[in-house]
Image 1 (tube, helix red, strand yellow):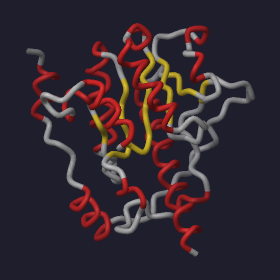
Image 2 (cartoon, helix red, strand yellow):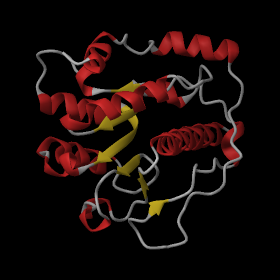
Image 3 (spheres, rainbow, N blue to C red):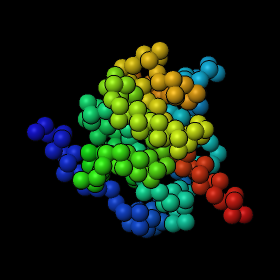
Image 4 (cartoon, helix red, strand yellow):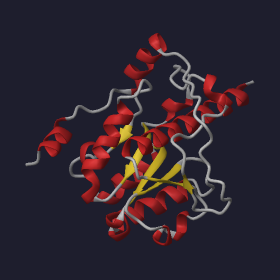
Length: 219
């Protein structure tokens, strides 16, 4: 058994919501970023986000980890949808996100799916219980019917492109970009570290906007 697969199977599950809430409430500080805007100059749908990082909007002062944050309304911050052949890359992404100061909670199917559960049930639950969905679109993804099924579930959950669906292209030409996602800007993975930062910033931005919207509705 490959070393990375053993590490993946023995990786402890992400902390519970309560432990995360208590640790962040005790030690977190508002997150901010000075990165520049990432939208391409092209205004057409299905365009790559080409800069090093997605800029966080003025909501960066919002503490997404406060005990009353709507972040805790779902079990996961992000669900990673990927093909079986991309597990090693995805495990690196998950380790990166979970190692951030915000301790993003990731759903990784090999690690977090309940043994004995139906695949359809697990995929649907993962989508419904996550704030954001990263679609790692590779040649394997395009050929995997389960990946397309989960993609359609995510689009049904949030049909308007409001930042929850995050397509990431790797080794796929733009002409092969799924038609269903062509109204959504994607991240093109050329440099792994750069793309990981973009994904992190996109998830962070959505959670900040979610928290700000919740705060306004309570005023």
